[in-house]
Image (cartoon, rainbow, N blue to C red):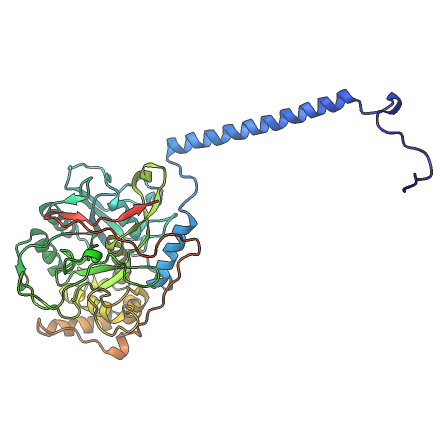
Length: 458
C-alpha cells in the first residue's frame, strides 16, 4: 500500500472546476492536430501524383534496375574478368550492331549519340526498335547508369535488319553487313543465326556468308551467335557463326557451366552436306560468354513500365564478347582494320589468343564441341597481349610471322609467354536469385535468318 507524499495536496484536473486546461481547449487542440495531419497527408498524396504525371510526361525514370539484376551482372563481370580490367572502355573503336534497331529513349542510353543508322526493313531515318532485341544487345555493350555496358566508350553503328516479328532475310542482313563495312566498322556484332547455304572449301551460295567473308578479308572482326538449339540440337552452330574466321559464341551460366540451350559445333567434317573438318583456332563454338539470365535493357519500358529485364540465349553472349573485343582493339589499335597490323592476320592472332586464354571446364584440355575453348576471360587475353598499345612491337612481330606462314599453318604462340593457366572458378549467383540457373527456348530454324529466340522477362 502506497502512502500519499507529505506536503501540499495536488488536486486532480478539473477538480472543483478550477483547472487551467479546459475540456473545450483540449478538443480544439485535437481538432487542429487532426487537420494538420490530414493536410500533410493530402499534400504528400498530391506531390506523389504530380511526380508520377511529370515522370510520364518527361520520360523521367524513378529508381533503376532491381538489385537482383545488378547482382547477376556483377557475377558475369567477375566470371569473364571484366572486373579485373581498368582504364579501357572501347574508346576509338567502331562497333556495328545488326539487329532489330535501338530504343534511344531508354534511360541507360541517354548519353549515346549514334555514329550511324541504317533501316533495311522500313527505310526510316530516325532510330527505333519495334521488337526489342536490338536494344537489349546494344545495351550489353554501351549501357550506362542503370546497367553497365562492357565498352561504354565505343562509337556505335546500328543497322536494323530484323523486323518486328524477329526475322530478316539473308539479303537484308547481308546489306546491313556491307553497310557496316562501308562505314568503317572495326567489329560487327551479329546476335542472330539461321540455316547456312550450300558451301564447301570456303565457297558458299549464301549471300550473308559471302558478305561476312568479305568483311573478314578486310580485317573486320565478326562475332556471331552459336544458336539456341542445344536441347534439340541439329548438329552444328548457326550461320554465319559457322564461317571459319567468325568468332562464334556459345552461352554460359553464372556458375560457369555451359547453358543448356547453347548449340553444339560439328568439327569433324561430314560427307553431306559437305564440310571439311575444322582446325584450331576455328573450331566451333570458339568461346562461351554470359548466356543465362543476362541483365538487359528493355525497349519502350517493355509495355509495363520496366526498362530492365533479363534474357537467356547466345545472342546476349555474342554482344558480351563484342564488348570485350572492343577493349582489346582499344588497347591495341594496331589490330584495328586500319591499324599497322590490321587485316586477316590480326583476326588470326586474336582468335589464337582467345583459344589459349579462355577458361576451360574442369578436366578440359582441348576444344570441346559445346564448351568451345572455354569461357571468355578478357583479363587473361589483355594480359597475353600486353594490356596496352606499348606492346605493339610484340603484336606486330606475331602478326608478321603469321603472314609469312602458309594458309594452312596456324599462328604459333610461345605457350609459356602467352597461354595462361585455365581453370574454372565458378561465381555463385546472388542469394536472392530464385530463377533457374539454366533455361532454354529452342531456336526456330527456317530459311530466313532470325534473331535467336530468348526467354525475356522482367
